Figure: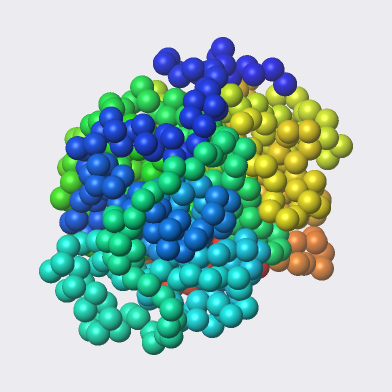
Amino acid sequence: MEKIWLEKSYPPGVPFEIDPDKYASLGEMFTKYVGIYADRTAFINMGAEITYRELEHQAKAFAAYLQQELGLKKGDSFAIMVPNTLQYPIALFGALLAGLTVVNVNPLYTARELEHQLKDSNTKAILIIENFANTLEQVIDKTNVEHVILTSLGDRLGTIKGSLVNFVVKYIKKMVPTFKLPNAIRFNTVVSKGKSLPFTPVLVSGDDLAFLQYTGGTTGVSKGAMLTHRNMVANLEQAKASIKPLLEEGKELIVTALPLYHIFALTANCLTFVTLGGSNLLITNPRDMPNFVKELSKYPFTAITGVNTLFNGLLNTPGFKDLDFSQLKMSLGGGMAVQRPVAERWQQVTKTRLLEGYGLTECSPMVTLSPYNLKEYDGTIGVPAPSTDIQIRDEEGKEVAVGEAGEMWVKGPQVMKGYYNRPEATAEVLKEGWLATGDIACMNDKGFFSIVDRKKDMIIVSGFNVFPNEIEEVIMMHEGVLEAAAIGVPHDVSGEIVKVFIVKKDPNLDENAIITHCRENLTSYKVPKLVEFRDELPKTNVGKILRRELR
C-alpha cells in the first residue's frame, strides 16, 4: 500500500519522518529540557506547583537514593503505583535517570492482578500510595519486591496543606485501610535523604527498556509490552511533530485527567509536553466531575486529552459550558472511539474540534492522529504519524483494496520489542517488524483511516458482520441517552443478536423509543433485539467501557 496520506492529507509543517535516535534515552531528553525551561512550571496538582528546575533536583535525589541506599542497578524493574500527584513525575524521571525499567501499576488493581504484574515483571522495588498499601501487603511475600516506598496523597503539597490533606484522607474520609509493611520508607524521606547522596549518571542506550507497560489483558492474562527508550523517544517525537504547528514552546498548559500510569497520558501529556516546556495540570480524581470543573476554572488551559466518556462527562457537568475556552487550542481523544454526538457537542461548547487519535500500548502508543488543521470531526482516526506505515490485510495476510476492511498492521520505530518473557505471544503479533493490531480498519482514497471495530468485539448476525461502534454511535444520537454499549448475545436462529446497555439522560426514556430510533438509522439486522437500562456501565481505569464485562 502506497503512503498516499503523505501527498494527499499531511498538514503543513508536519514532517514525513522523525528521528527516533534524537536522544539516546528519555533521561537525556529530560536533562536537556529541564535546562531549557528551568523556571517554567512543569506540573501542578491540588494548587501546588513544581518548576522544571525543582523537578530535576528532586528526581536526581530520588535516583540517588534508589542507587545508593536501595542498591538498585541499571535494568532493575521499579513499579510506580500512584495516581496523578506530583510524586509521579518525580519518581518517574528519577527511576529513568537511574537506568531502571519502570513498571506502571494501576492503584485500583486487586491483589490477584497486582501479584501477577509484580511477579511477571520481577519488580525489585515499588512506590505505592498508602490508600492501596493493604493490597500490596496481601501479596508482597509471593513476589521479589525487596523495597517499598510509601507516599500519602498530600506529600508534595507543602507542610501545612499536605498535613491537612493527609489527615482528612486518613481520619475523616477513612480512605486508608489498615496495613502492615514494616520496612517501608516514606517518599518525603527518600527525597530529603537523596539530596545529600551522590547521583551516578547511568549510560542508557535506545535498546534498553524504559517501560514494561502492561496491556489490559483483554485476550487473557495481562502481558508486559517491552517499550525501549528508542520506542518512547520515537513516539514523543511523532506526537510532538503532529501537534507542534498548533502550539508554542514554553507557553502551553495541558489538562492531564487520564492517569499518567496509562500509556496515553504518559506519552501524549507527560513526555511530549516536557519537550515543549509545557505545564501539566494533574487531576487526581477526574471521576469527581464537579471538582474537576472547579479546578479547570482556575487555569487558562490550552490543551486537554481524554477518552470519549471523559469528554461526555464534562459536557454533562453543570458549569462546564460556562468555563473560559478562549485559550484552548487542542482537544485530543483516544483510548476508545470518539462518538460523533460527543465530538460535535464538544466543538459547539468549546469552539475547538475534538481531534481523534488511535494507538495501543504495543506502539508506545500513538499510531495515527487527525490532522491538526481539520475543521470538524470527520469520524476517522486521521492519518499515520510520521515514520509510520500501515497496511490493511485480509485473513490470508494479503493487502486489501482502498475502502475495504481488514486487520490493521503497523510498522514504525514506536512498535514494541515484544512481550516480556512471552516469545509465543510475541510471535503471534510481531511479524518481520509489523505489528498485527487485532483491529479491523479501512483506509479511504485520501489516506484517512477508520477503525471499524475490534476483531473480537464483532457481532455476527445471520452471517452479517455488525460492529458495536456503529450501534453505539447511533444510540448516542438520541438526546435521552447518556452512555451506551453494544454486545452480541447467542441466539438459536441467527447465531447472535444485538443487545445494548444504556444509561439514561432522560428518566422517561424506554425500550420502544430506543428500538424506534435504531430502526430509523440502522438496517434491520443491526437493530438491537434486547435493551437493558443501567445506572452505570463498567469501565477501565481510564473510562473505557468494558464490553467484555457486559458480555
